[in-house]
Length: 411
Image 1 (tube, rainbow, N blue to C red):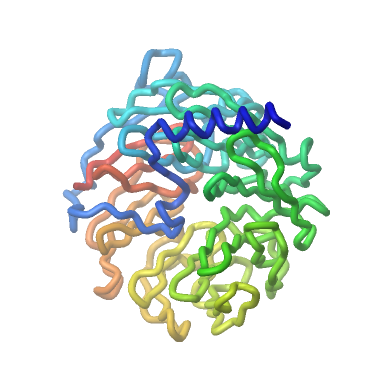
Image 2 (image 1 turned 45 degrees about the vertical axis):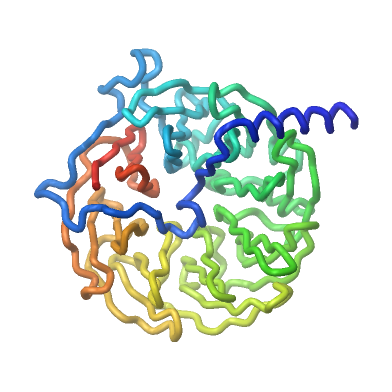
């Protein structure tokens, strides 16, 4: 025990000495809103200039490093002030790639076997905090790396170490970190959700919750005056757990049996918003002051989204529903506006929507002018489906399409 404590202190001091910058799934608050300003309000014909790209034909750092591009995958990049990190699968092995802001691959570190069945490749985005990086493979391998050199620090497996049960499409959550704790969802009958010490992988608590498999959801941390609340989906249940000890505080069963709930909820001013697929729709939930109970305010079938994300701007919620983008009034749940554009992924920055659809088209949309498309272009590089969520950072729009990663200048 003394050795574990000493090791944790060493790692803690090491991480604190590094850049304390955080980068994670869908931005600082996991809400799809990026804090960049001064971005272009329209793009040139053909789209913004391509700053750089990595794929099979264009090298990063040397032929060996760039072979296979960034590997197969659907996991999004995360971007700090000086690096891009992304997961990818090559020949059945998952790698964490570190890339500089000019598109050069600095290093790639293996994190174990990766998902090679349906929709083969990486599923989740890394989480960067305090000089450490945390990744999760589709097979449940959780690994902590040194962000500078890519050295492996510790690892745990959600199946072999915590007898979890995998999903039909592989574990897909982007790991949530809060202070010294890492949260994950093995989906076991008695290990629905777990909390680990992020410095050494030691188990802090286990929650049975509803005892069902995870639902591809990257969880959200809600910080109240007297409690921290972990909010996530598990198979057919929406869950709220006390982040301190894993106690299940409340749950809400979904209307239809759908095991895919890939969207992180949004919390604002005492209300939780989520958007789910399979007919469940979008919902506004009132959270009690102490976080111990919930009350549904409205549910709308106007926005049904499985994994493309949604954003809340002012009093409107925007996202893709079936084959159109819609705007929902956050007070009433009523449909406000719509845009004919193939379904896909929604993020925002500098007052604009960035809509990336499953045909590979990217549209810049003014959300409050009848959801009008201002500019658009088509992704021509990459492989397989357009499922990876874009990222905006350092004046660049980063888009992963399979083995390729592109950076477009939008400032």
